[in-house]
Amino acid sequence: MAPRTQPRKKFRVVIKDIKGAVISDHTRSESYGTAFVNFGIPTTPGESYRFRVEVRYLGDDPYKTPLAKRQVAAKKAEERAEKYRVEREEKALVLRRKRIVNQIDHAFLTHGSDAVRFVTCDKCSDVATILLLTHEHVGATVIDAEQITGALCASHEPWWRMYKTTAFIKCSRLEFFYDGIKQIYVNPEAAASGGAAV
Image (cartoon, rainbow, N blue to C red; front, side, top):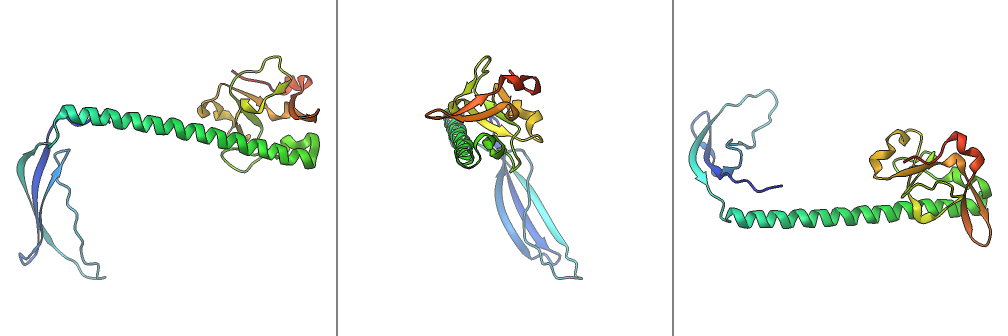
């Protein structure tokens, strides 16, 4: 967020009860030219209370730090925020991929070719209907685990493009086999029921 170029506004806010006794007297600065008043009031049921609020405009309240320095600080803050955002997304991707691969590994040992049925959605606990991929896999018969970026169920599938992925494959096309290493096999005969999307 860019720093504000206009100075803040300073106000004096005095709150009194109906008898004129001062409850609060303070000065505050606001960035949008409006004095916000906050104070505690009794909450005894059946009783009403009246207060008098006096707000006096005291003029501009310039920032202590020059605009140029605040702009530099704001830019650095944005860069840090972007760096942390990218790091969070990368960590989240690794965790999603690890979760899916663990589900596949566990199910593979106990359910063989039906292991894909035990992969769950990233957003809920329903069975996934598609695997999100880093790129299209036209003609490929095997999917590398590193291609996987997530999994979505039937409810979340229509919004797959919102999850920053470029392709997906229907789980109904996936099978598993063991040939020294566990592999995710793409059944070409099931292409009619769904395939990669770009």
